[in-house]
Amino acid sequence: MRNKSFILILPVLSLSLYAEAQIKDKGVHDFGEKTVNWWLYGTLLFVAVIVVYWVINSLQQRLKEEKIISAFATSLYGQKTVEDIFWNTAKNCVEKIGFVDCVIYQLDETGNVLLQKAAFGPKNPWRREIINRIEIPLGKGIVGSVAQTGNAEIIHNTAADSRYIVDDESRLSEITVPVWVDGKVFGVIDSEHPQRGFFTRYHLRMLRKISAICSERIVKYLAEDRLRSKIARDLHDEIGSTLTSINILSKVAMQQGLEDDKIRAYLQKIKDNSGNIMERMSDIVWAINPVNDSFDKVILRMKEFTAEMLEPAGINYYFNEEGSLDKTQLNLEQRKDIYLVFKEAINNTVKYSKATEVNIVLQKKNDSLKMIVMDNGEGFNAAAEYPGNGLKNMQSRAASMKASLKIDSIKNTGTTITLEVIIT
Image 1 (cartoon, rainbow, N blue to C red):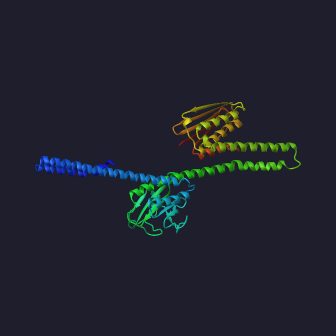
Image 2 (cartoon, rainbow, N blue to C red):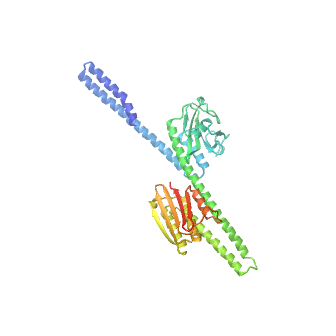
Image 3 (tube, rainbow, N blue to C red):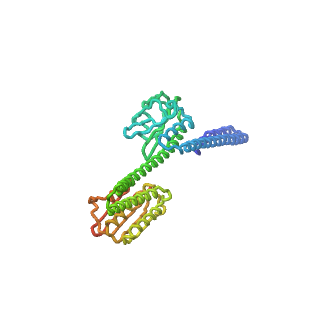
């Protein structure tokens, strides 16, 4: 803003100084000096008025932009799918920015092709219908080039650009902006106009802001979708099979002619399985509850579980907490997986280690969270295959949160399990 104001003032100021010099050269000093002073003051006043006008106009323009962006962001709150987000975005680009059309493409990574997912304007005559959907290969056309490079483009004259692909009809100018999700181009917002040179830096600035808001909403939706899928999978895997076994055991126990000992054995299995379900449900509900987002709550649950498992077994245990653990925030998946890895480690210690002492270290350093569970048990061969799923479950959970899991075990010395995860 200051540079532009200076540019406005400079030529007029130079003209004033030149006029002053000319009048002095003619010898008309007194009258000339007064004239020059008035000329200079008048010129500066004129420039000041121009600068103030320019500043006010610029602020009004910025305010108008912010109102449009705010209205756009608000309109996306109720959109629950990627398709909803795209259709809403296309509609708002036409209605709020003044485009004659807007088409949004999504990149299909399996086929390296861009698919038309939403439109508003001539290609959208009715509801969510798109006339003559086309596919554009990655790298082809202006849309494909932007998707490949990730750089937005304004084409002032499409007739002079060999990349231009005619869709429903030929238009003379085009603007294309990528939509980024998780560090990759997810889609492209594209608009064309029949007037040559129609799109300006204002349109580019607005479309980039809209793209950023669109990206943020898509990221949130995809995270929620992955979370729902994971919870559904956990419920199916961890509870579905147990309920099936309870159902079968119940039917067998109800058969006539069974001895009392066998009936009691079946009922004990039903009791054990139903207890496992209750425990797993408790873990899932605890992980979902946003009240437990802080790592303090994770540590508290760890300590409760450790006391519940190790004290009846006569195993001494010690917690050592290092770093700013109280300020550590975890997402739902990290919180759940870290706790379940810890739980599996403690369970294995009680069942197999014959340890008398367990040391638990929780350490936060920079963006790294480290959990160490050490026992003084009899150890085992970590490279061998075991019938249970305990070690496999720990490795699977570590892999799902992109954490490193290290298991060191020495015969007659003990076992150390180290989990390290990057917290972002």
